Amino acid sequence: MLMTDTKIKNNKRQNDALKAFGILVMTIDHIGFVFFPQITFLRVIGRLAFPIFAWYLSQGYIHTSNLKKYFLRLGIFALVSQAPYYLVFREWKLNIFFTLLIGLLAIHLFHRKKYVFFVLLVILSKFIPLDYSYYGILIVLGFYAFPTKQLIVLFQDDFYNMPNVEVSYQNHLLN
Image (tube, rainbow, N blue to C red; front, side, top):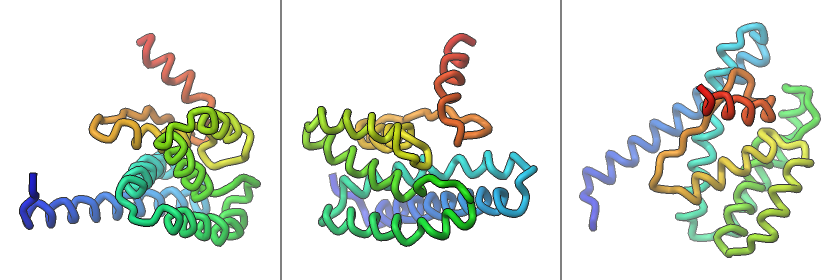
């Protein structure tokens, strides 16, 4: 089924708007962390950014014409942004670009049916100090594995404390 020019333009506008929204909520989160750490709401708003970036990463994997260049660009961003990340957040863990990079590798392993390596990567990501830990990797993979279904990601006030997501989800099921 061919899309009309109008539909293509509307999809591009929607994609651009979603990207801009992701950047906006990420910026609000960072401003809240640096200048207003006592205002938790600013950090909560920022939790919307990661699923947006994870979805775009999965779409990028599907639509890229050169996977090696995609990996390389993401890897360069990860390396270049690590020093500023540490200077601002004062946490010794790898920034979100490393999470996305490992998520991209997880998608690739899953796509190539290299399930043993995929599982090992997810297990290893639990022990690497990643932003969003292995949950981030699984969110990225979820958007790839279920591209036409809506994924509901349950967030909590402090998304950095990822082990509590399991408890929150269990509590949600019990209510």
